Amino acid sequence: MPLVGASVSKTQPIRVKGTLGSVPNGYTAWLTVRRAPHGLAWPKEPRVLPGDFETEMYEGGPPGEIHLELVVVDAAIDAEIAAWMAEGKKTRRWDGIDLNRSQVRRLHSIKLVSRD
Image (cartoon, rainbow, N blue to C red; front, side, top):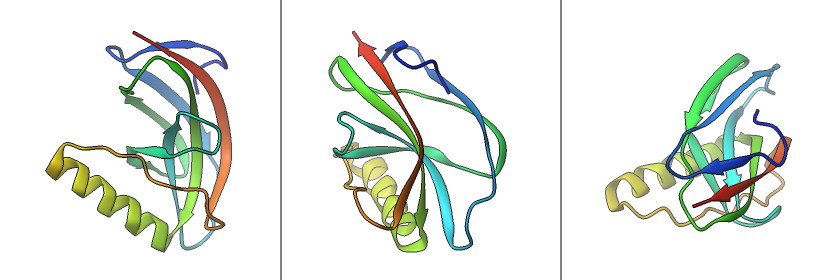
């Protein structure tokens, strides 16, 4: 994961690297970005698989504080995220998704600052 408080740019990728232990049966892991600690989320593809992982992502939107989170979700929420992704790809609209539910477990969260 990036360092807490790091400054990130919407024109440069955010490089995320880490290790995910086992995930409970029926759950899937995702990296998400939130604009507020319990606000709407923007999941990032691909899903995170157990073991070492490394990915790059971009985060648009206005400058300010963002929260990069590693979450695990149950099968129903995973299907909802997949449908949200498909709709976003089709419409090019990426309205946030509410992941403040009991079927979502936050494993790790860090605060970053988005600029430009």
